[in-house]
Length: 396
Image 1 (cartoon, rainbow, N blue to C red):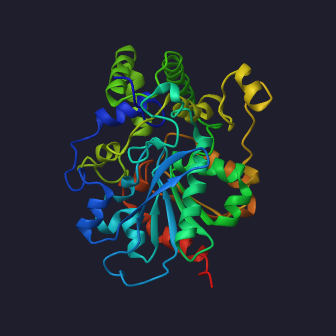
Image 2 (tube, rainbow, N blue to C red):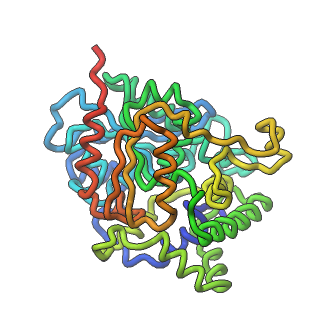
């Protein structure tokens, strides 16, 4: 039962799963290839090996029905939430889904499936089915190797020197870490990074977020101590039910903060939140703990192993900070004004740190998941404009 998990804490994951409405039937059972075939979009697939041996599936939508014969489209790379798949960008049909919309607008769309997600569970030497192999020993910082390998593959497959990027939630968080840790690579290879539902820190957030994070980290630590490499949906359900028996009020509060409607002005009658949850795969305790680490401490650092292992790994008893001010490529921030899972003072804090690298900063009448399953037309025209303005010229 205990083999998989999800994002932003165990309790939040299960609340989203159990509290959402009936599952919509449109494309819910189709993978990306099938959705592309259904609507007449092109589809390609690549196997990409990272520096540390993970073998991930990079997907591509090279054309839309109306521009199949057009060559040399500017590439854009879409990064989903941690542990999710490329399908999250295609839930709203051929016009309103971010991936399909960008293809319609003339972009060559590439989609990440990060390590551990349903389409990317292979490694040169580690077996994901054997906990002792170390396959699941990764965190938010590790994802930078996935992104760098994918972006290099995109460049090698196109006539462009740089790539535009659009990232969602924990994908945006891990991308922000990557840009700060590897500024030379990203400044040379990314023309703009568009971050959506991005939570740069929880330094200004309320006590509920800190309390929930601390509670969930204790659960994750217990699981990790007992050799559980990742948690299954059934295991999450068990943990959720236990939590709700202990504190029904806490369950209700968490749901109100993180779930909401995809757009605060429309009802989620199609059950799109539930369809979104189908895209989640493996989610190991270490990754989940790193996501929650900032919420529990209000700091942005490498993974905290504890004083002893930190000293061995980093040379100090505390994990080193991740310095956002090292970011050296253009950044666009797409912010959901109705996202109650953090304090928007954190947006301003990040914007000030990256200084002149910030090229776009805009709030939209969306809640946290609205960029994926809400009224996407509120922000997609701006995203297209930002990506177009920064698109690289074709190699000669």
